[in-house]
Length: 174
Image (cartoon, rainbow, N blue to C red; front, top):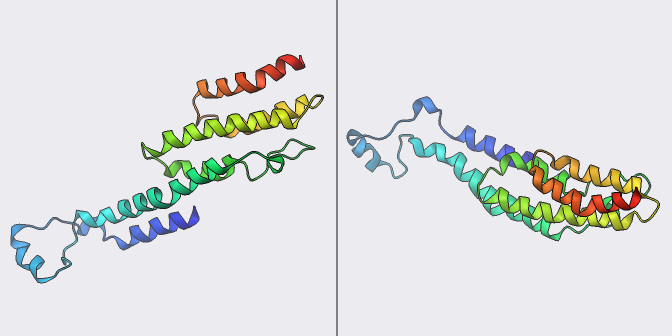
């Protein structure tokens, strides 16, 4: 994330200041023909930031996040067996920092669908990992797994996840 933000800063610093930007006019034609690179800054130089952002997001970040999310499988290293604390390998720790940058219409909905599926798998894993007699730790771990996603996933998705996995176990517990 820090590298991505540094690359965007460099792209912004490499762009000419906005007050110097102007579009070439017909009188500038001879000047533009003399230099193959065009000596006058135009609005296109502001596109450098957009090009860098889009290229890095579409070609590097989004594919890597998608691949890591699809390869993620809940395991015993996901949660501390004694306390029920989620470890740093939980998807929220490496996806949530990128969400402000994933403001592309095609990226976020696809990623959120995969996140819902993985959360369902995490909750099912926690339910299996904490067998009979460890219900309270299971409930606490399940809430901790869902908590980072409040405000990101819609209420209906979170309610569905809780009612499909947590509520049946809560009914048996009570």
